[in-house]
Length: 331
Image (cartoon, rainbow, N blue to C red; front, side, top):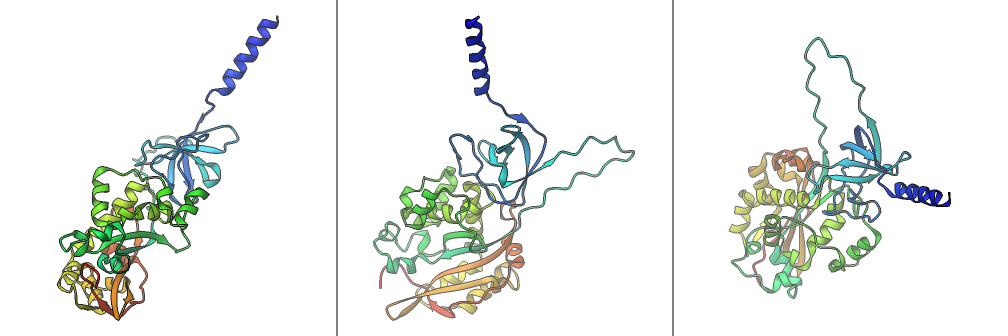
């Protein structure tokens, strides 16, 4: 008899350790940005996948009857099936089956895209290197390098500015805020995106990409690959426009913010320049153009073009009225 009791207890224990997922049908509507975990117990999140606030995801299962986590499908994540905390949103049950209508039903409406506001920050790298000549990205800058003649990526910042470090573990946030960027895990990117980033975000040599992902990208409604790919897509549009022509013609000369804004109007439509702000910095007796920021609003991950994103954004003050577009090398 004792043997049967022991065997029975062992079987119960074994079943208790088995997976208890309960399949579900419906939609998980995210209320805020939350991590998409591959494993609840280990807290792993390959690709640093984040849910987008207001986005609906296909609901697959819950971890137990009184759910602490739901398993959902996040498009573009690898793998796409992830666990999110129950407190991060709400469950919208699937509609009950209805009798077939006499007339063909309309196709279901597509989910509303996430239309957030952003600031795209683009740097003039020679001006940055004037005050940071020992940085690895500055020591080897030459006049032939991409960032000596074109604007470089600083970052893409979801707005309002308080939207930072979304659901980031405390240790990573401390490292990002304290400048210990080497303590932030390397970002998993495709070979093509990494190659573009190394060219168009030269400060990734100082691990700026890790800092930007932790501080700003963690609040983006997609994974790191999409965050940087979308950022680079917008930068490429600027650097293939009359804005880049204006900058290249004026390297080493004084350039006005009015001329920069006019170039944006020419490139992306009337009023685009009003979404552009110029930042300068004083080095010795010279005032250098250091950065431009561009206001955007819309569904970036959906591929919306720069003209539409700028047109939807609020206008900005012009910032610095004029400055010198610095050449490579310290003066």
